[in-house]
Amino acid sequence: MIITINNDDGTTAYDVNNISDDKTKQEATVIVQKVGNLQVIIEALDFASRTHRANLEELLKDRDEAVVKSEEPEVEVEESTETEDK
Image (cartoon, rainbow, N blue to C red):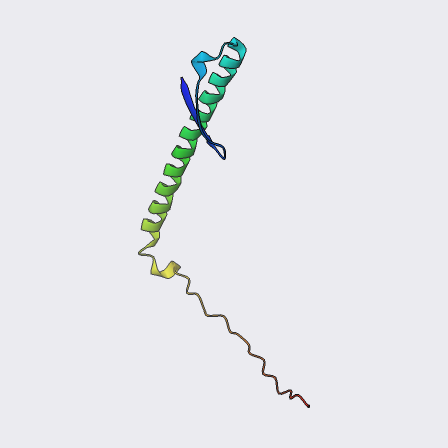
């Protein structure tokens, strides 16, 4: 199994099958599987989130009574009437 790692030092490819120490090889394989599983979960959560957002937008788009109108905040301008004496 070839693994490619991208970091600040560049890209490095490793062949896990060439690791001579069985314990290290097994640990590397387990970590690769965990990373793969997490990546699948991240993609699934992203898909579900986008779907729910789209469904909510579709549900609310014709609900004019639920629209909140934003008001422009009033900005107070303070005038200064000070003069400099030279």
